[in-house]
Length: 234
Image (cartoon, rainbow, N blue to C red):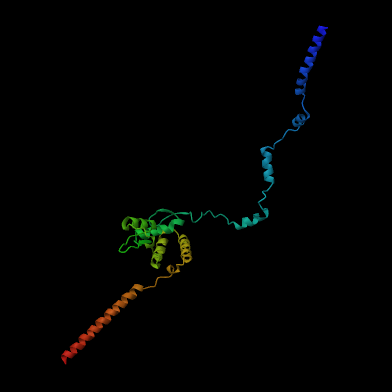
């Protein structure tokens, strides 16, 4: 009896221990479905094909012809603002956008015609850069008075600037484009008077007036001398 009980207990233990292993090994229905239908990701080739076949939402293909018609054909010329050039006077490499300022440097250094001058009494310091004038005021006059910085906006300066510009630029077209922009800027700030032609023989007229005054004075003195001579003869 004891042997039968021990055998039955061992058999019951074996079945109980074997039961969970069989349960763990048994695949579930969901795992079978997942293994049968795995998540298939599209390949790179398929993604590229889909993108090429589908147009973006923001693109309107009907306006494609209009865009091609509006955009001019590339002539191979760069943007004139960033087009490189050399100054025809000093051979300095420049860009078209900075050519106008380079002309102001020439006028200041070569011809002593400055764009900015110091406005303190008795001071004749001038320069093409405003910051140099303010630095001069601080160093010499011990006063940074921006109101005393005088900018040369005369017709004579603009005429000399334009003459020097045509000498600096390699072509007449580039010079004319820069002049048009400068004139538009002067009109915008209300300085159309700079664009007016300088009156001819203005200085000569004053000299002639002075000469006429001298002649009248001399003629008057001669008449007085003649009259006094006639009186002495009588």
